[in-house]
Structure formats: structure tokens, C-alpha cells
Length: 177
Image (cartoon, rainbow, N blue to C red; front, side, top):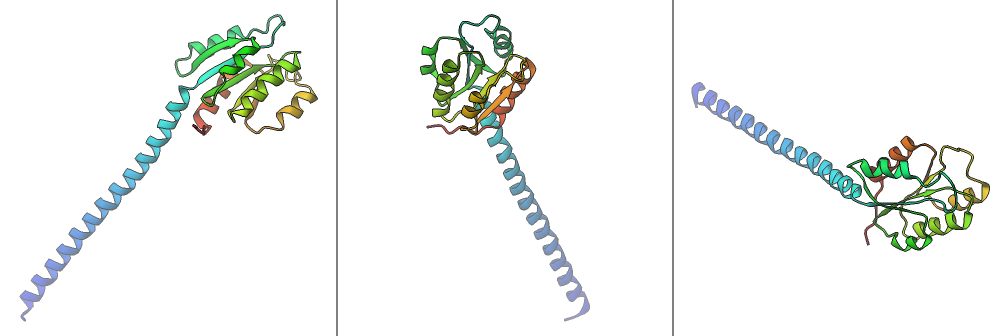
């Protein structure tokens, strides 16, 4: 073997190693890009699926200025959310299902509050308790009931209510049955 043949063989080997490195880099980059985009797509799919969940608002019966009209209109006018209904009729708790987000206005009728809350917790869905700007509206009997369940949030202003709705719908993993 002469020097020129050795040089040619080494050049070909260097070209082969370079080509294999480029191919390996492209394959690795493509795989990583696929995994990242697939993960993002799955999260976005869950997020948009959750935003279609129906929001059910229950306000306390027989109380003045606690019908949650303003709050419900804000949720309804927001194109991201799917506001279903606003009611104080206890019979509507049968409309709560696993594809819901329940908002309960806190009033003086504890049995109404407890009935709606227990029905929502049976489906293992998140519940938002709205206190109408009074951070001390919840009594110890409310807290005793709330502390038995982990998926609740307490808010007392309309902006916090909107924020909680968005946060829950964008992060909570619903178990579809």
C-alpha cells in the first residue's frame, strides 16, 4: 500500500464518520422534536377539552343580592368557558356530572350548601366556593365539610373567581368514566 491509497482510505473513513454523525444528529433531533411536540399537543388537547366542560353555578336561595348575576355573566361572556346554568333550585343538583365544574355561592342556608357540595364531591370534580367578597363568610361547619375533600377552592372576588375557573380548567385532570 502506498501513501496515496492510505490517505484516500482515511479520507473515505472520515467522510463516512461525518455522514453517520449528521444522520445520527438528524434522527436524534427529529425524535426529540417529536416527543416535545407530542407532549405539548397532548397537554393542549386536555386543556381545550377541559375548557369545554360545563360550569354550573348554584347561588343561595332566599338571600338578597347574592344571585351571582354579574359573576355568571362574566363567565358566560368569556369565550373560553362554557357556562351551563345559574340557579338556586336544589333539584338542579341532578345535572351535576363528571364533566362539570361547580361554583357554590355561600349563604346562610347550610343544608343547601351541604347538599350541592356533597353531590359535587361524589363525582370527584373540583368545587369553587364563592363568598361574595366576605372572607369570613365560611363558618367552622363549612370548613369541617370542606376539609373532607381535596378538590375545592375558596374565592371572594369576581376576578379571583374567573382566575380560579381558568386555573382549574387548565390544570385539573378529570377522570372520564
